Image (tube, rainbow, N blue to C red; front, side):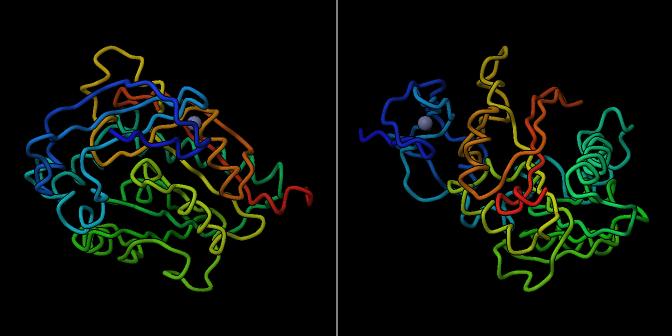
Length: 286
Ligand SMILES: [Zn+2]
């Protein structure tokens, strides 16, 4: 077996953390499996990045998110009932609502500290918005929200029931020409790609020079908790998991500079890691 080298530091030394010999529900709906199937999580012995090595070479996620990812057979409920259920959770039980509250406070503080932000109407772009629960909780009289989501049904739900402008497609710098935002958010998105540096880098063209990029991902520390292997964190749509060091490396290689970093225990029980960043090119203008 040819072992992959680390995406971040190119080390070819790694240790197996978990090994799956049966396809999970996402692989099944993509008809991936059969004889010789395996998917293992490895930890880079050099930098600590957690990444997957798989028996199949195709990128699972090309074609998954347009429709199948949100299939009731995979999610256990349809888009409308899932959105309604989460929207009605008490705030302290909702990851999205808590994230919105937390981020508003952080963004105001960090924006004021580093860019002398004054109270004014601002624009936020959420990439990979899913059901748009986060923006529904985040938007208020101070924030004008735009979302990017690839699932057409999720886009329709968001526009019709939440009133959020939602662009249907896979984000890249050409999807939203010209428009610049004060805040771009990547909530639980970078772990779904095998090239997070490309994705994060592409955000630069839609972010104002005094704007902030928020990135949140499942925390690699999850691998150390009880029954970690059975957690959703290690499902097949995830390609990499980060800790403070490896997330810092990804952010730096993408042309951003971290202004704030946090580890959070979510209401749903999982650990997440998040950073607020600015473009590296503006650091010397503080
Ligand atoms: Zn590494």
